[in-house]
Length: 184
Length: 332
Image (cartoon, rainbow over all chains, first blue to last red):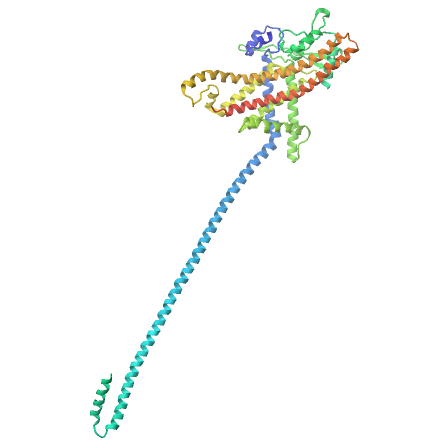
């Protein structure tokens, strides 16, 4: 029990209560020993923390740091790759759109050209037809006129020969022409 | 084994004198006391205590000696106590101070040799060998699997402290198992100082991690309760929280001290039984046979002590790491 009595909360108290020369108990707190323990611990801590642990743990810490760095780099690489992939995808999409647009444009152009050409051809054809018709008409008219004139000449010549004996030329011609115009 | 025989020789040489009759103060040695008292020699009416002087601190230490008693007592110098204000400090190097210095010197030598070996091995890109490999394995295991997981995020700065505590305690524990040496960690002053350092470490870690929130580890003030509930609970819980802060280092100090002391007392008490049996059997042949029982038992206890030396240093460090982790993560 005396030993427990010696277990006093502080070094100071322990030293005050412990009578000089009394045998130390199991639970006697010894300020001097505490001081030495403190000094020894701090000294060891300083030495080991400075010279021993970094050397022993250095390789592991370096490996850990390298690992962290590698992971981060891999992450960055993956992000970059994903970005690149997205870019490429976008480019391909754009290219596909362009191509489709080109094809559509081409088709449209061709369509337009075809219809224009068709129209032109048709127009030319109709023009040609029209001109031919017109020519034919003109020719026909001219031929009719020619024919009529020839017929008049022929008829006059024939009639002249027929009625040479009874009528003078002027009177007869008038007569025939009057007849012919009535035919129209 | 060597240790056990040396202890045995030491005690055979002193067989004529009685084993310890413990003072009532030395309650821890109750088991040993009983046996030791039976072996007490009453020649000259003087009863000598062999157990407690071994465990307690003293102003002398022993060296191996081939002469009488197989030991030579070395008186340590006594210095005048120094006075700092009202405090009187006797800084005389006692037995445990000497043991502390021996243990720390050995520790520094071992660690520096290991560090050099590890450094060389790393530089050459090969695995470490021998002592360096052993120390590296321990350091790496403690750091990666014990300290860092318990201390929590960014625990790197607590690793040197925990490792230093572990190795210093381990070396002191193991040094105590060597004959003629003493166990500094079996002294409450030493364990109390180490626990005090742990306490400071824990609280500083708490202050740094929590900032102003550190006050919540002292004053219990939950924000999600009505004041009518909060106030009485706080009045009850705050003393508990404050008490909890001091019970942790107190338990650390007591656990280490008691474990180291108890083992030595058990071994010494068992060896004391050798002489008790010898006396009871009138120093005949039977006493030699009977001696085998306590000798076998004390051998087993010494084996256990080697394990306990590692275990207790591990527990001290583990609990320090756990407490640091707890306070750093305590957000009320």
